Image (cartoon, rainbow, N blue to C red):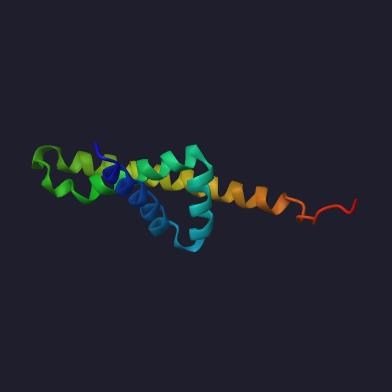
Length: 104
């Protein structure tokens, strides 16, 4: 696996998350870089969304079951990520305002 390859999946995971949470783009970006758990949720979401997008290529016998499986996964991840975003908003609101350097 080349470094370029991982770089592109890295980006698409963030882009996928942004498309699911357009209103919270800034928060999504912040969480993507600071939270390992959120980062892997983004990657899982990208994988599930991609699998869902390509479900038509699967044999007819398994297609519908897989579609439901991937759609359920996308939904569960969206819910989990939505909760993480809401949590981080609360944490950010609780923070005291930054103060300048204290005079000596």
